[in-house]
Length: 228
Image 1 (cartoon, rainbow, N blue to C red):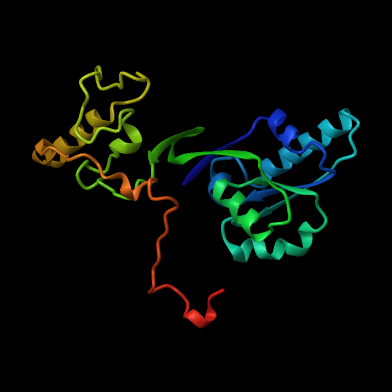
Image 2 (cartoon, rainbow, N blue to C red; image 1 turned 180 degrees about the horizontal axis):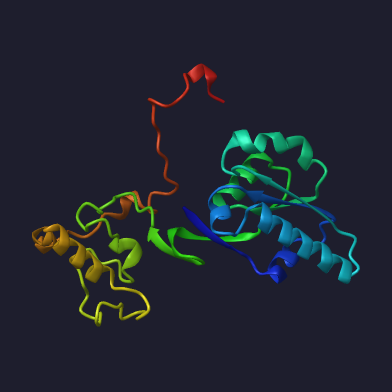
C-alpha cells in the first residue's frame, strides 16, 4: 500500500493562511491503514486547526469529510457542489489523491496535508517499511521475492556489496542487508545457482526516465463511445 505521513501542523497552517473556510478531506484506503488520512486523523487535524485558529483569533471555519478513495472519479465527483462552499481543500490523501482532486476541480485550491513516502507494508504495529519502488521491471523471480531495488541502499542487482556486516547494511546497521536476505532465501529454496549468474545493468526505461507511466488494458476498457 501507499505509505504517507502527515505534514507538520506548522506547515499545514502556513498553507492555509488566508483561507477562511477549509474542508479537511480524508481518504479511506491506503493512508487510512497507515493512520495518516482516515476519518479519525481528519477529525484530529480539523480539531487542531480549529483550536489553533481560535487561539490566534482567526475567523476560520474548518469542516471535515472522508471519501472512500480520492484517486477515483466515482468517489470524488459527488464533491462538486459541496466544494463550492470552501475556499480550499486540505487533502489527507496520497499524492495521487491530491492530483486527482486538482484535476477534477481545477478552480479550487487543493493542498497536500500528507507527505507521500513509499509503497510498503506494516512489519509490526506502528512500523511501515518500503518494499517496492514501482520500477516497472520486476525481478522478484530472480531474488526470491526480496527486492534489491527497494531494500538495498545501493540498489545492487548483483550483491552483496561487501560492506555489510553480520547481515546488516553498512549504510544503516538497523536495516537487514537485502542481499543477505536474498541469499538466505535462495538457499532455503534451493535456488542459489540462480544467483550466481551475473545480472546485466538494469534498464531504467520502465521507471521514471520516460515521464509519467501509463498502463492500458483494452480488455477492461469501455467501448469508445462510452469513454469520457
